[in-house]
Image (cartoon, rainbow over all chains, first blue to last red; front, side):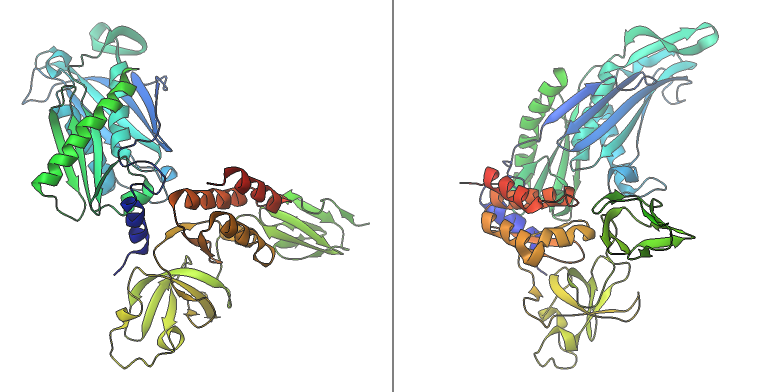
Length: 259
Length: 230
């Protein structure tokens, strides 16, 4: 079988360009808007080209898990609403939604972005649960990078609400204290189409991907998570190239985040 | 006394009263409700004497015999192919209509068309909503070579093609791209370089966005002139 769309895409890639005239290592324009929600403790909207993702952080005072009595926790939930793409449907979370939330979760958890010990108020009795909700508003490709960036941007802005008597949380008032962030892990996606490695794939490119690697990267360039999808395998050499490219591009993402 | 409440080429919404009295007659997509005529869709009014009709601006594609459409092969059977033409039911491409070659019984049909191929094909017969036959016999009907495939609103297709193909030839002339537009809103496009392809796509997007306005050919021409590459 000859896939006419893919063959055409490969012929363009062969000339050193992409179907939207970008270079292989070019991101679309990235914008971050902070504090877009009044009811969330921290929120952000990230757009990469036409892709738009919003993330909100809520903090809940709860009992610690029995196996980690002196630690708080995080919970990440992604919902792919039909309004954001004709491919998404209503109903229970799809495989894509679960994958997206778990990849973002893994980067944040394994990158030790949050100091879980500092989220504990009283050992075995009360701790903060950090709940991150991620909603794509429009899916024009590369939801992973956008979701990872949105989650970190929202966490960066998160402030604890006030605790009143008897451990009642007053969400209307902020205590002014920021969430204790230890690291800033970010996701960067590199895809392989034919023999070419490209970053920030758009909708059309995502449909023709042979292999896709989402890498979670810390400030110092260390890796904290990795997820490989797509039908084709990757050899060690290719993997190394893709990771190097991801490390290089994450520096750019980080610049946007720190602005 | 009958009264016309809308003007020629005015945009209307569903339920909008177009005329009062019994002198006016309902044409395409217009409904008579007691003594008034109401619009059934979002569209542009056309008044022809006493007849009021509406050209729809949005809507899905409904197959009609004779339409040239772009479809994707979704299955290969013993005696034909199943083609997705963007309708609720797949169309059938029988051996008889597919090729003028003699095809032996039990031969490998994927040699002709395989799953995933895009075909420029013509609807031969619409027996019912579920039974649609397409054929490959006709001028220009073929298996499409590598190119971009994208969709536009099926109701905008006449505007994209233009009067006697004026609009589409304009795009072809300025961008040097090969373009095929199916009545079902699927577009196949292939050019020498990315810039020209993107210019052709943005011209088609412009037509889609402003399809209800007049003097569009001139504006598209200016747009292509302004953004011409090289």
